[in-house]
Image 1 (cartoon, rainbow, N blue to C red):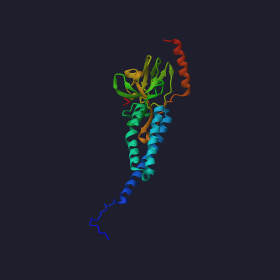
Image 2: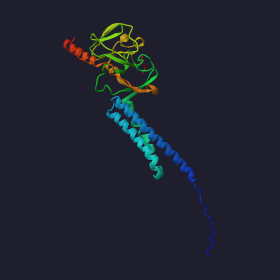
Image 3: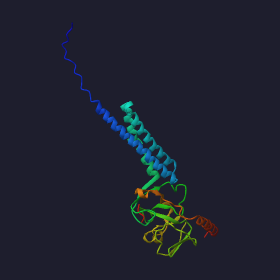
Image 4: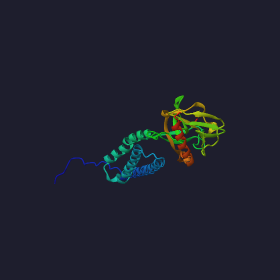
Length: 279
């Protein structure tokens, strides 16, 4: 019989399994919540993009990144106990460090989020509301009558403003007792909160636009400081996203169909003659 004189081997104390179990459970809940958040927010953003006709390649890429982030969170939530911790760490790094970089770049390329501090566009744009602006709206198309556009103030390019396009290049805008006419044709404006208290006539140069606020008596716009050059227009206001009780698409089809006919007639006459506040 051999007797060992070596000291007994002391086993290191094992960590309590319930601690790791609690940590994993908490992480599973967090990842599941983040997955649901991405799913819901992605669905809302997809609805906004679709309704506002903003389904460009950049915006589709934004939706794909948001969807991929949500799928990774769900994968982490349901596979956390059954995969190596290095895999989980790598996936967390992807959704926290890698994907946010292109997502932020794409969002800032495609959209602007601005706060409407003034009341010159009331009631269309409530004061203190937050507006989503489509920065890609006019890359291929020109601004149209009725669009609410974001532009740099001609006399102060550091200041951004929101106004509605009323007159297009080469048109004549006249205002008489609050009634706006284009090339002598009166237009219906159901969106204005109050009619203008001023009168005048403006012939719009080529490449320039005539813009007015919907709250006519309380708006600093083209009637007192002139036209907006095409290159100053940086985007189209498409959605009010905060406060939530004002969450809605910004309509630009405020001109009835008969006005479209008059607009085409006016265009024929013209072609034949050849002659981040709202303020």
